[in-house]
Amino acid sequence: MFHDGSIGLSVTCIDNPAPVRCVAGRVDRLDDLLDLAGRSSIFDISIVDASGLLLAHADPGRVTGRALSPRVDLMARAMDERSASVTLEYDVEGTQTLGGFAGTGFAGVTAVAEIPRSAAFLASRQFLKSLFLAAILLLLFATFISLLGSRRLTRPIETLSGLTSRIAEGNFDTRINVRSNDEIGSLAESFNRMTLGLRERDEALRQANAALIQSEKLAAFGQLGAGIAHEVKNPLAGILGCAQLSLRKVEPETPIHGNLLLIEKETKRCKTIIENLLKFARQEKAVMKATDVNQVVQDAVAIVSHQMEISQVKLEARLAEGLPEVHGNANQLQQVLMNLLMNAQQAMEGRSGNITIATRHEGGKVILNVADNGPGMTPEIRARIFEPFFTTKPGGKGTGLGLSVSFGIIRDHEGEIRVDSTPGAGTTFTIELSRLAAQGAENQAAVQAAQ
Image (cartoon, rainbow, N blue to C red):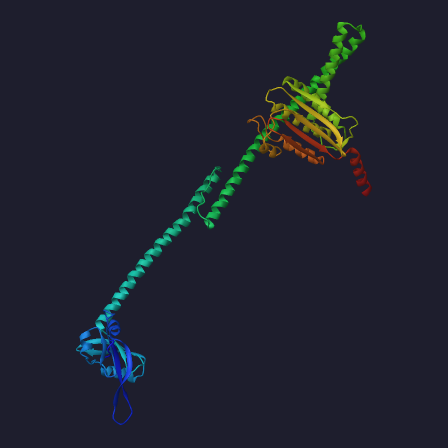
């Protein structure tokens, strides 16, 4: 024992025939060895030298008394087997004991750990019991997590199943609140997009059905109007003939002569209106040919002028002279113009206003402008004005098909139609027809030559 508390180990030096004891050096501090020996409450741990002298033990009294370990023979047996460590079972005062011997490789110092066999088995049973309880707890925890995860997975699917039944009943106003970013969330997002698309298509189908019903009404009204116009045309011809015959027998510059002239004029006007109505109502194949745009404008104005006067809307036509003919269909172009004129008159909503329709030839194109001083349109409405079934009119007063049909007609004429409108400053529709009659004739001749 050194003054600083370390222990000196003695080894036998073979220097002569008589053994000599000499100091090999310091192993460790005594308090460190005692701390090491007392760390376990289950095992009896001791550190001994080659002669069985206790260097460290949980019982300090045994160390200070420098007691010899009773396991010297077993320690020697362990060391004889030249193993780094060995475990043996032996009897200590009638108690079966398990002991572990581990050599340090320095001066025969050996660490010994002993435990009664019964205590070892008890510790094993306690360990297995603790392990079993931990396994049960882990199993219960895994079951809980599985149930929670499966519930989280099946609940949105059950919701989707219920909403699918509602959609099958025609209720497309259903929506799932997406709460996750996983596959279920993607499925719910796709479901919401599907319901939105179905709702839009259902609304489009309803509008199409309403438009179909309205078109059937218009077709029936057109047939009835054509029949009435045909019946009225014959009496008008008789009235016109009688008025013209009477004019021959009445002296000029008399009141009767002036009245007969007025009857003749208004009868011719009524006859022209009826002829235009019959032409417009006639369902004929769209045959493209040389068409006078100014004449189309005059025919459209003749039909709607009386209604404009009733609505206190002034209609003015400014027709350019020497306007070239276009390659088109007069009936379809007249339909477009009447649609624009009636929309402008309806936009006034009973107030007085002005509508101007003008034609001109510019840049190899025939251009028509239909302008009004009505309330105008917002940018949102202007962006959708040519969409099918889009209308700002109250229900039952419009189908939303007039401008979309007009757009299709102008497109078939290889032209363009656009709108310029500002809220409170009126609206102007511009139609450009670029295919002139001369170009149409040249193209037709080229096709015939190629054949």
